[in-house]
Length: 84
Image (cartoon, rainbow, N blue to C red; front, side):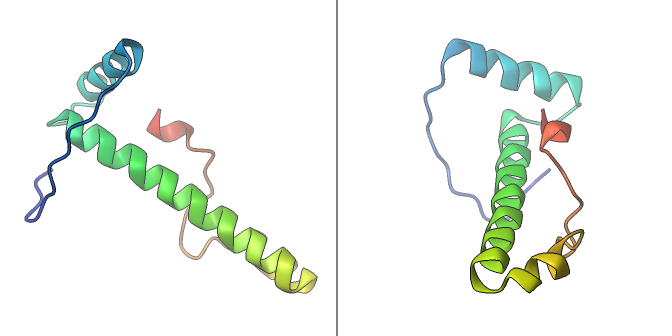
Protein backbone atom coordinates (compact mmCIF):
# COMPACT_ATOMS: atom_id res chain seq x y z
CA UNK A 1 0.00 0.00 0.00
CA UNK A 2 1.59 3.23 -1.14
CA UNK A 3 0.33 6.69 -0.28
CA UNK A 4 1.07 9.83 -2.27
CA UNK A 5 1.03 12.13 0.73
CA UNK A 6 2.22 10.90 4.10
CA UNK A 7 3.07 12.38 7.44
CA UNK A 8 5.86 10.63 9.26
CA UNK A 9 5.40 9.92 12.94
CA UNK A 10 7.64 8.43 15.53
CA UNK A 11 5.90 6.39 18.21
CA UNK A 12 7.00 4.38 21.21
CA UNK A 13 5.30 1.07 21.91
CA UNK A 14 5.50 -1.48 24.67
CA UNK A 15 7.46 -4.53 23.44
CA UNK A 16 4.42 -6.82 23.35
CA UNK A 17 2.47 -4.38 21.12
CA UNK A 18 5.46 -3.88 18.81
CA UNK A 19 5.80 -7.67 18.52
CA UNK A 20 2.09 -8.02 17.76
CA UNK A 21 2.28 -5.40 14.97
CA UNK A 22 5.25 -7.20 13.41
CA UNK A 23 3.50 -10.59 13.67
CA UNK A 24 0.27 -9.13 12.21
CA UNK A 25 2.19 -7.60 9.31
CA UNK A 26 3.81 -10.92 8.47
CA UNK A 27 0.66 -13.01 8.96
CA UNK A 28 -1.37 -10.77 6.65
CA UNK A 29 1.37 -10.19 4.07
CA UNK A 30 1.35 -6.44 4.56
CA UNK A 31 4.09 -4.37 2.95
CA UNK A 32 4.93 -2.48 6.12
CA UNK A 33 4.10 -1.95 9.76
CA UNK A 34 2.63 1.36 8.68
CA UNK A 35 0.00 -0.51 6.69
CA UNK A 36 -0.94 -2.48 9.82
CA UNK A 37 -1.31 0.78 11.76
CA UNK A 38 -3.44 2.30 8.99
CA UNK A 39 -5.80 -0.68 9.16
CA UNK A 40 -6.04 -0.39 12.94
CA UNK A 41 -6.75 3.35 12.88
CA UNK A 42 -9.34 2.94 10.12
CA UNK A 43 -11.12 0.30 12.22
CA UNK A 44 -11.09 2.60 15.26
CA UNK A 45 -12.42 5.49 13.18
CA UNK A 46 -15.24 3.36 11.74
CA UNK A 47 -16.17 2.06 15.19
CA UNK A 48 -16.20 5.56 16.65
CA UNK A 49 -18.31 6.87 13.77
CA UNK A 50 -20.89 4.12 14.24
CA UNK A 51 -21.00 4.79 18.01
CA UNK A 52 -21.42 8.52 17.42
CA UNK A 53 -24.29 7.95 14.99
CA UNK A 54 -26.01 5.70 17.51
CA UNK A 55 -25.48 8.20 20.34
CA UNK A 56 -26.78 11.06 18.21
CA UNK A 57 -29.86 9.10 17.25
CA UNK A 58 -30.76 8.18 20.82
CA UNK A 59 -30.00 11.65 22.23
CA UNK A 60 -31.95 13.66 19.69
CA UNK A 61 -34.89 11.46 18.84
CA UNK A 62 -35.57 7.98 20.21
CA UNK A 63 -37.37 7.12 16.96
CA UNK A 64 -34.09 7.63 15.05
CA UNK A 65 -32.58 4.71 16.93
CA UNK A 66 -35.02 2.45 15.10
CA UNK A 67 -34.04 4.05 11.81
CA UNK A 68 -30.34 3.52 12.41
CA UNK A 69 -30.54 -0.05 13.66
CA UNK A 70 -28.82 -2.13 11.03
CA UNK A 71 -27.94 0.97 9.01
CA UNK A 72 -24.28 1.92 9.40
CA UNK A 73 -24.11 4.38 6.53
CA UNK A 74 -22.30 1.95 4.28
CA UNK A 75 -20.13 0.52 7.01
CA UNK A 76 -20.25 -3.19 7.57
CA UNK A 77 -21.23 -4.15 11.14
CA UNK A 78 -18.04 -4.95 13.03
CA UNK A 79 -16.67 -5.53 16.48
CA UNK A 80 -13.17 -4.76 15.16
CA UNK A 81 -11.98 -8.36 15.45
CA UNK A 82 -11.15 -8.58 11.73
CA UNK A 83 -8.38 -6.04 12.32
CA UNK A 84 -6.78 -8.07 15.05
